[in-house]
Image (cartoon, rainbow, N blue to C red; front, top):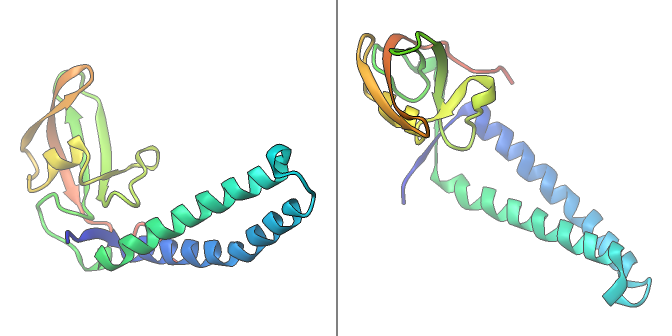
Length: 162
């Protein structure tokens, strides 16, 4: 069983989501019951919608519950160093265009590229892991190979305070 790194904040967020989803169960069951009482189920859009909602709800609950035991919860406030690892914020420069990007390396369950965090399992994340400031990396992208230089590696601590 492989462990999955996650921040303390990310773990708490998933715990809250799981709790909220479990509280939704009775509402969905009631909606199914009420739709069933309307009669013919073959042409009952309310029933179909409630059953679909129940399926998505149960799938998400099962997904989160299956991952919980595998999480390796890491407090970002305890991390530091000079190497690009989980929790590091890495600034990279495209060697060809000079574009500079900054990413925080996180686990797959909390990476949000639009907010500046990427998964350590992504192509860029994989290329960065274990590297140091000044190192060069090559990433396979749809447009071809991209050469980056690591400009800086810092540890900022928690990504958000709960």
